[in-house]
Amino acid sequence: MIAVTSLAPGHKNKDNQKKAIKSWQDAGFTVYSINSTEEIDKLKEYEVEFVMTTRTGEDIYGKPYVRLDAFRDFVKKNGDALIINSDIIITGDIKTAIEKSKEGALILNRYDYEEDVSKCKIFKSGFDAFYITKEVAKILPDTKLALGQCHWDYWLPMVLIMNSVKIFTSKSVLIMHKKHDLQYDFASWTKTGQIFCRELGLKGNEKYESTRAHMKINAMIIPVW
Image 1 (cartoon, rainbow, N blue to C red):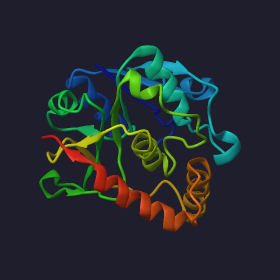
Image 2 (cartoon, one colour):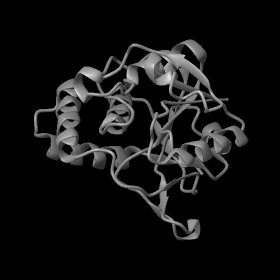
Image 3 (cartoon, rainbow, N blue to C red):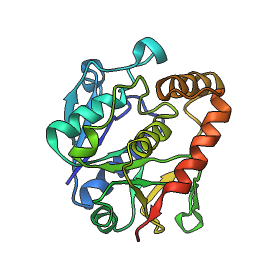
């Protein structure tokens, strides 16, 4: 199995990224990270396979955040894969959830914790891991949205819904995340919200359409395990 992410050089929570990678490898995944050449040079301490890309949003976000269409192309070339944020830890039997969602795509909410993992709480406002097949990847159009920024995790399931692809989730605690300060501000959220609306042809403002999309995604998700 393949897990693909985009590691962040100089990440404030470097140890969390390393713990995340180990959890993916322990779960049986071969791990890839898609980054710009400049970032790869700064990430050599991580034991993953690196994939160089020029498909970044540096002109939009000021940093070379990797656009989601680079991940789409990776899956089209390499096969079914788990697209996952770089500091998300796999804690449960994700293989079973993947097997039970083969008819469509698997999308997962993370569970946040501070120090005590037994007190983790589900983060309902977004999604941090998607398992998509090569066939599903072929459906996805180009996008300027990128991992590490907002709204890509709404854009992906919304595109699937618009193309009649089933989306599945698990009620089990499969992925966890140690809480930290937000890596984005309201201005960047608004910017990605505008891109999200424009690319999907949504006519309302970004706050309205984001809320509406979140409700639609949750209404369409099928729990599988």
